[in-house]
Length: 278
Length: 260
Image (cartoon, rainbow over all chains, first blue to last red; front, top):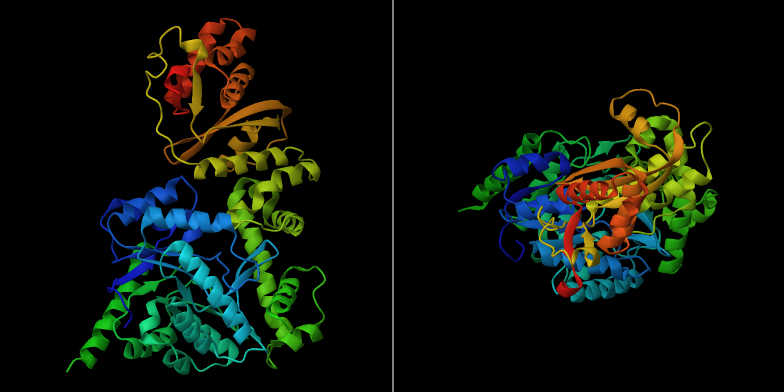
């Protein structure tokens, strides 16, 4: 499995659950937050995060780095990110393998890149710049995609593996995104997982999606579906014990329901461990 | 195509009112018989639009309540088409919506620009840097000779908003879930601040608004207190206002030239 200690099994910390986290001991091993929602200098979110951070590890998961954009990451964004990383001392800092900024304008989406050698060189150089600025390793998550570029000459997993090898970044492996993109683009999800170097995986995302008929939409508004759990079983066989993080961002249910998903991830890992043990 | 050209085409497909011809998209992006490339890009384009409407609704929930879903979504789309997001936090998208609404007021509701300004500043106050409030005796501890020359340092969350309509009746109705009353024209000043994590606002009397304006601009306490000279019992009015500012946590520090 990945380098570093096993964080255990966590959930995305979202505002509807702030009060529950403040009112008692954390119900999970660790949490992840959306970086940009905590960059403001004050207010309730950052105060809650500092309290939670005093008790359990926190990962910062960004959505605005847009590492593959031709536009370089704006200096004010990097400065805010460095400040937050210094303040929270997160277990991981991550964003997405995507682009999303064009001539100073943000799309606020995680748009797929063409998987070409040109794009690879571009992203490697950007990752190195950001890692130097942060003074630490960045994890990049495989995005969910609805369209592919005709120009791509590498599979997404080949691109990620080569990116990790060249830049030293890690992979935040989103198993739900592997499933969604595979269904939408006609990829083989098992080949995808088998193409990711185990040592590069920092942790795994699990989430739900919606079936729109012609495509699957990465909605994060439901429980992890059986097909994604099944794919995660394969991930466990390939990667061994690995930290997991359940994301639930829309139609957010009571905390217990999200925590139950995280416990299920822990149970699956224990079950996989027993099978592997002699 | 270079990476730059690919991104320019993708961006055009998401944001342009006149999207690229299907042939151009099909040459660059792969589709299938049941979901051709232009339809796949349309998935991104619809999320692009919806995300902006949702972000603005989060910042301006009361404005959305007055307008209703459909009219608010139309306003949000019109606004976002001329004010694309240039900040990494999508919550900042609405920074120019108050001015946009004042330039393009809807029929019968010239007060909505002011309502939007109030909601925007409430969001700004929510995320403002925290400050430890000066103690209740901060002013009392000043030596009498230092008092007129001292200056207040206000908490970053404190803001003064100058409006063309009194937002109070509209705000109260919205909080109570009642139908919006008619606009209340007339200049007024509203203070916004944070009590713990809760954002609050209140209309200020003219003299107190002028005093707060002076304090925010770094005027001395002597100049701040002179703002109350226009009314009856100016000393009493100044004392009451300054006491309430300290009690509400508006004052982070009281500085004298000697303490600089």
